[in-house]
Each structure stands twice: as C-alpha cells, then as structure tokens.
Length: 253
Image (tube, rainbow, N blue to C red; front, top):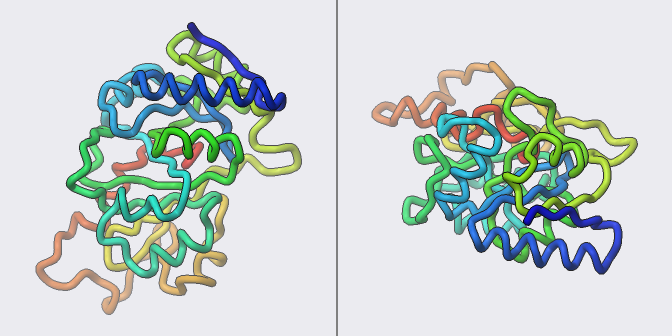
C-alpha cells in the first residue's frame, strides 16, 4: 500500500525509513528528498527494481539512472580504475552536487540499462537521503517525475505524477531548501585519461580546477598532450555520457 511519511516528525521519519528499507528489499520503488530535487529510488542491484523505476518514469533502458551512495568509501566497491584526480574531486565535493561517471566494477551483479560499462555515482548532501542509503546501500535514483514533466520539489508533487507505482513517499519539505538554487549536479566524465565536464551544474568549473587544474570544461577539446595514447579505445572518454542520459537531476539529479 502506498504511504507518505512526514520526515519532519521524528517518529514518523523513523517509521518511513523502516518502511522504505523494507520496500527496497522487496524490489519496490520509493521517493526520497535529495539536496537538489526529489528522486525515485530502487535497489541498484535488482534488475527488476530498476526496470520498475524506468517504467514508473516512462523511460527506456537507453536512459539509465545514476546511483546514489551513502559514503565515499563505497566508491571503490562500485567503480574501477578510479584515477587520483577523480578521487580528489570526490573527496572535495561529496556529499554535494557532483556526479562522477566511472567504469563500473565488472564483477557486480547489476543492470542499470545501456551504460556501456560505466556508472554515474553521487553522494547527496541530504540527511534523509543519507539515512536511507545507510540502511539500504546504493540506490539507483532518478528525478521523481514522469519523463517530460517537471521534477518534483516535494513528495506530494511526486505522488501526483507517480501515484501507486511507488510504495513509500518520504516527505522532507521543499527541495531544494528555501534560499537555495535548484541547480542540478555537475557531471564529470572520469572514464578517460582527462576529466571533462559533460554537464554544468552546482559545482563550477573554477571550483573543480582548484582541486584538479586539468579538468576540461563543457565542449573544451584536449590539447595534443592530453589526447589518449595510441592504441587506447576512442570510445573510452565518451562512453560515460550514456550512464546519465537526461542525467540525474537528483543526483544526480
């Protein structure tokens, strides 16, 4: 049965998180607040649950959802070939408005859609989201709206669009919080030898370059010295864009 919980009330928040954890374990979808807008989440390791998420939104497997994680040390369990520069950005901007596209761990039993072996990861700066992620582990999360509609800024607005396709709605008040801009996460493709921004967002290029000076801005072309070495896969630096498609208005969003 679909239920909404007011997370501003401690007891109701605890009941809501418990119900949401149970729903995730049963391959059902939940709606949760994040630091950008509301997201619809499902067990990242359940193909059935991810399919339900995509169907609820009215999108295809060509638009795979990003994955939200509860802590930075989950990075190495989900991604491989994480460069020192990618790690610097994660350490600087997680939790927060940065999504990193990385090579997915090939040994993991998951199916997020047509990702070309990549995964988009983010750690959100939202207490309710992090509490739930701590209980459930990584969640596939996309903006809580039907494709083509405006992303929901409250759980109530998400319910108007997603209705009974979601088991639990965690209402945490308006997102983003009052006084904060509703800017999506910045997405950085970290699958190649040079990090590059593939979507501008909450973290500016200037801030990224404070930690990794060589990050390429949106549309910038690498110099000859930054080009992939001969014999490397020319798809390597572009495959990551598939992992985000309309790309995580919640995450990542």
